[in-house]
Length: 122
Image (cartoon, rainbow, N blue to C red; front, side):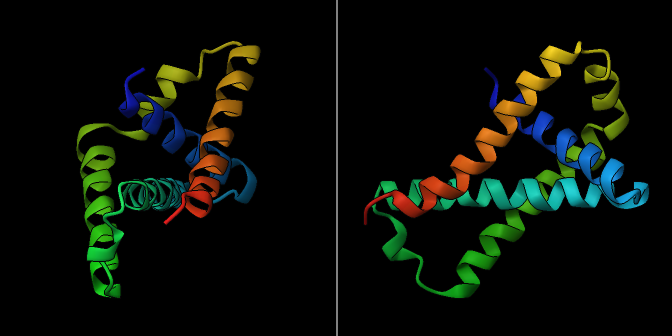
């Protein structure tokens, strides 16, 4: 599976959830962008810990700058290249059981992103 499709669906799911639950349509793209970037940052930190490269990044501003780079890359992808309406048209027609399976995988990814960050040995 193409990981960008996974990230696209996670972005779409977060934005759609944010829009339907909080009824703030104008902020759904910011919520999707911010939360997706947090999960990608957790994945990045997990890889650094797994390969024992996290000793080189000790300063807070280095972590913050990496997170800003992730946000900028996601901003370019989801504001310049792919719009929310394109993703909505792509996945809105899915049947209910397909949506439930995709949501299950999305929630599993989110949980594993945070859990694996904590259990990777140093």
